[in-house]
Amino acid sequence: METPRVRIYTDYKSPYAFVANKRLFELEEAYGIELEWLPYTLRIPEFMGTVEERTPHFWRKVRYAYMDARRHANAQGLTMKGPRRIYDAFYASAGMLFAQRHGLFRPYHDTVFRRFWSHDLEIDELSEISGVIASIGGSSQQFEAYVHGPARAEHDRIIDEAEALGVFGVPTMVFNGELFWGGDRIDMLIERIQSPESIAKALGSRHRP
Image (cartoon, rainbow, N blue to C red; front, top):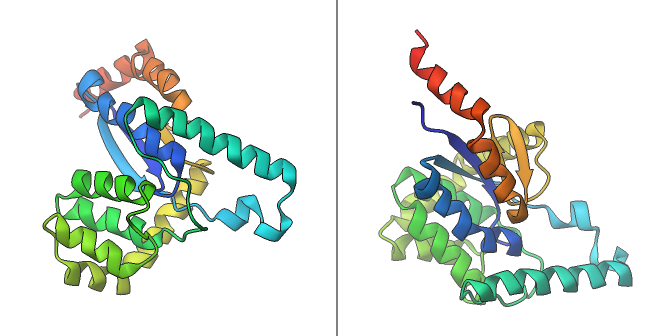
């Protein structure tokens, strides 16, 4: 039977992406699926507007969102401190792609999320992301060459492909072309993975010529 694959779009500066990690990684072991992690680097001003444009109503929503995410973080024993400013997470996203190619994804992923939300990492500083790569056994020189070379084009292509699928936020999970946005949709994702239609599709793949 073909191993079901779930594509996950994430961003290191998203609190809800951070707190969804635990359950998403558990899917691999519990349901025998393959996870494909890709960056979807949020462009904050594009969907939240500039700081000057934001209303009191908006700020009430933001304060609640972080309070809610912190509840989930506390339940997992995670530290979550509110972001100090608006971040461009391109370097962190490029680091994800680089780490995957060099067999370093999980230590990179866990380190960047943990340190960023503990106020111990500036994810839009190339030198700091290079330091993470080096700390987990990667080459900071190779990473920086990647950043100054093909990283931007690859990153932007992934974003364009995500948006063509309908992705607009993180975490977004894609299974058999169907989108599930947010950690609170993981149970619905599991239902799809276990559905007779999904099982039949996986079994049918064995008999294709």
